[in-house]
Image 1 (cartoon, rainbow, N blue to C red):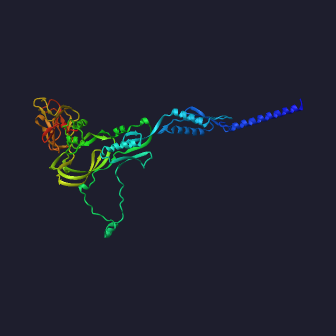
Image 2: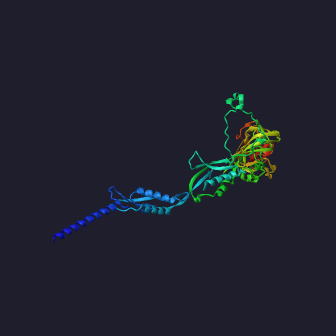
Image 3: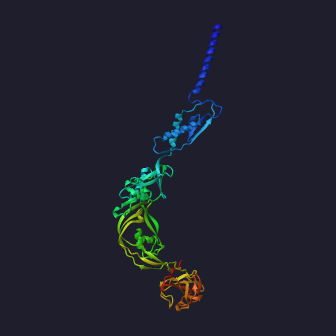
Length: 532
């Protein structure tokens, strides 16, 4: 081989080696700088496979980038939507150590995240308002609907449309909490009172404290008052909270008004006062008498039943869930009665009273300030009064002592004969029974039904052996057909004290106790007086 050929081969090998060297260097540089390449790091994991809600969305070289892209994907979904979108987003990544490798572009990974999140989107939550009144909760869609709900309650009692409900941030609580304010539409700002002393005051400045000039108070005439509704407010504590809820949990404002403003029948307790009758109570509470009897069947048998002072009657009163307070100034020309005057007598029992002066109605002109809860007047203040005819009050003398009570005079026993008309059980027995009988074995202990003084103790014709006791409330008790008497005439006995043994003496058909209670000498049904 010639020298020239050897030289060419040597140059060719050199060029080939140089080409391969630069090609390798170029490829290495490309691997370093081309997007997606992961350089080898000896520290550990440098390539991360990302999943959202269990679905693989791509690979990244840093978990922080995945978290950032997830936030951007959520923001992209939320943008342009009304309300708040609730998304389930669980981010997972698995790392590995690579000598070199490729990661996906951020746009690719983010797009996959959006797709997965949209498929797992649960529901779109709307900004809403939760209203709480006592135990009632309702969710409304807008602030305007909340104000419309409360305005409906106010409008029931605001015929002239002068008052307006506004929803305001509650400064004492969180920013999402609201409170209601009822304003007079034509209300003007309070006048600024000048503290300057008028020059024409002259020497009066030195005659009054701090240089103030006082006018003599002038009594108002009836025409000087401002009549009508002065103020209105909601009676219940209202809580309004801004929240985010699904649309299917929201209530229409008309339905909310129906539930919150419409009157419902609410049971309340009425205490019978002196002078009450069932018909008068029915008029007071606007409930029919038969309905009152039905609701109080344990106390009343019919509309003719007797009621007593202090009795508690259950009546229903129509009340809305949301009540309204208001203050009105009114003018009346009215017939009126003075309050009854009571004279307390410590020697009488509380069930005793006597009218000492009969009442007489009066006539007057008045201007009053009335406070209402819904349609019910709860307070009345007379601002001006002119008497045309003065009323005369009723004067009643009444007792204060607690009256004595009566107990069953034996333990056990079977009621064998009631009070009143009956067929005579044996010859000589009364057909109009003045007491009641309890069948009981001879020798059963008999006790005083009430404390008092023994007025008879011994034999008395048809009663057989008997005991009569006089009581301080004017009543008398009688115990008949006894086998043995254990007390004497004039003896003082206490309630429950043993006074005799039951038997079968006198006009009797078998062992039993005959028991009477007499008022003013006349027999009454003992079962109406004996406590059970």
